[in-house]
Image 1 (cartoon, rainbow, N blue to C red):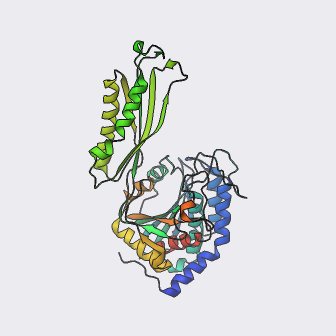
Image 2 (cartoon, one colour):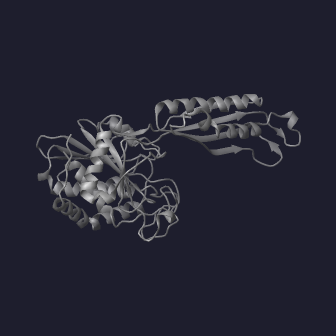
Image 3 (tube, one colour):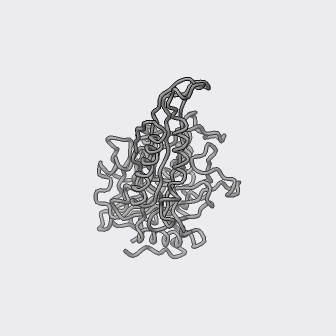
Amino acid sequence: MSTLTFDATASQDLLDTAQALDPLTIELRRAIHHDPELGLQLPNTQKRIVDALTGLGLDITLGESTTSVVADLDTGRPGPTVLLRGDMDALPMTEDYVSDFQSQHEDRMHACGHDAHVAMLVSAAQLLSENSDELTGKVRFMFQPGEEGFHGARYMIEEGVLDGVDRAFAIHVLSNAPNGLIMCKGGPLMASADVFQYTIEGKGGHASMPHYTVDPIPAAAASVSALSTLVSREVDASKSGVVTVAHIEAGTTNNVIPPSAFVEGTIRTLDEETRNKLRAGVERVATGTAHAHGCGCSFEIVPGYPVTVNDVEQAKAAGEVASSLLGGDNFLEMPTAVMGAEDWSYVLQKVPGSMAFMGVCPDDLPIEQAAPNHSNLMRISESKLHYGVGLYAAMAMAR
């Protein structure tokens, strides 16, 4: 595949066109931010997307099992089908940053930038539809619910979103990265994410007479300590892995030894071999420690997203297009992957493609003071969202 290289005039024209859409991009982003929705059913967000796309000459298909939106721009000319994706869902948390468009729901917040993803992709759809004479083939716009742990991409794949797709591209914003900076790399970009849960089963009783009980709390504490050394002792130092215990629950008061203790956490890796090794290791440590303390143990792994692996050539193309469009100073080839997880991984398992990160650090904050994604104070700069609009469009034009 050869990539499109924009000359200075074409790049500026594309960015100027994208920036002219700023009022629409920002208005839609704020409307979605004000009314966040969770999971796989996002009817209000879906309606806003459909309303914004109506009249652009797109073939729009609504999801059956979810409130997804797929919109096709078919030029009628031979060429590849390029898929562009924006995820739609929010997080179940309270927003504490006050603004005119602060979440109106106490228990929901767009704390991962999906509102910006949707708005940028809608504006890219408008830009491309108005300039379709510069395209060949087909552009498919994938508006996906349920990225935050609900496997929304998998549902859309089952309903045919990847049928006929030749390559795919997505953008994810980062609130604590320099505003307008595009970041990408080939190979593993984001980690797999599995949940482990286990219950250590003992025998409850009076806290003053532990010898009549089988106390699960020391067993739970010992297992957590043992898990903290699992990665450093069993994973090749040249590879990456994270095991974090994030939830412990046991007991109800100060003078009762409980009958059980619950432990929950996450496993993150960048390759399947390490993933399988840590899954087995966590179970071995949890059950073995429980048995050593005379307790039983029920253990479960809840499989999460696989490793997000950028196609090397597609990631290189994304870097070249971003550099041509925005200038080399606005592109960074990432030296390492990040340990967050993404269900875009399901798409990249099926078709060549990539994801790029885009910095949206607020203009009034230094990087070190910016709240990261998933923070209750997370906010973004809107001043360079047209970079994302332009990059989506440029990746559709690249041949």
